[in-house]
Image (tube, rainbow, N blue to C red):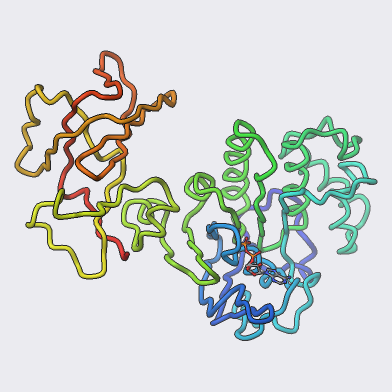
Length: 361
Ligand code: ADP
């Protein structure tokens, strides 16, 4: 319920929930013979920030459009705060939506853009004006109220879009690739901004993106989709550290899959049938072969290899190392006084058995 009311509250009769639980029950959306979304069952907790992550065509946008009411399910039901919304048109679903393209009204000033959702709800002019000013202040756009959207930068336009989605205090916020049109630095700033707004307003938020970093940074939980179905749902850390499938391991970060595990993994690691062994590049150590082995060698696998390729990437360095027919990517944080290796250098790689993950092939 409302613990905090950063903008003027709606009249009591108009108030829904500060945030609401969302439930997809076995939802399928067919386009002809193609299932854009297949048997989707998912509960988003009230106040949660949940990201739907997946490659292009995996059904992310369709899932969001189903929730927004822009498309109807072929089968199944969606519940908001425990009630089916099957018969509720999109404009009555009380959700704030932010699109990648901002979708601001180009012929209205920033102030009028923000006022629009309040007008739709019949708020009086004085109340609308007060809310708009507070929201402009909140998103650091106080000086920009009189501008047209075309006179704003991409980041500013997206802040207006976020403000407009939140201003009527809807219980649910939907973000469709919200940062896709911004350059990298601005994206990082806006991630901080979105996180702050989520913390402050506490809206149940569903974000759709194909950007793994965005998903990891923003979310309480991530749903990874593949070909219309959920592949795995978990917290960012659990998904990255314990991916269930090879697809998730590769989609979320970089993964070294041992194509020929007996070459590398010692027999004392019991590999479940139907899985492949995987290790993250930053879990592998790289050293000069003549340097003393690390003291916890009992737990460590240690193999000889040759550097094929080095990529310097600022805070880290990435080596591609050949071990027989296998190639492994090693990611090492750049620190002072560290030994570096060039292509052709012999190296020793080592890792802990406990950093090996078995993922469904
Ligand atoms: P994503 O958002 O993950 O890129 P979408 O939800 O847009 O994926 O699409 C999922 C699948 O459904 C794709 O194969 C896409 O081509 C198909 N699809 C989406 N919208 C339509 C539509 N309006 N008509 C026909 N096929 C569609």
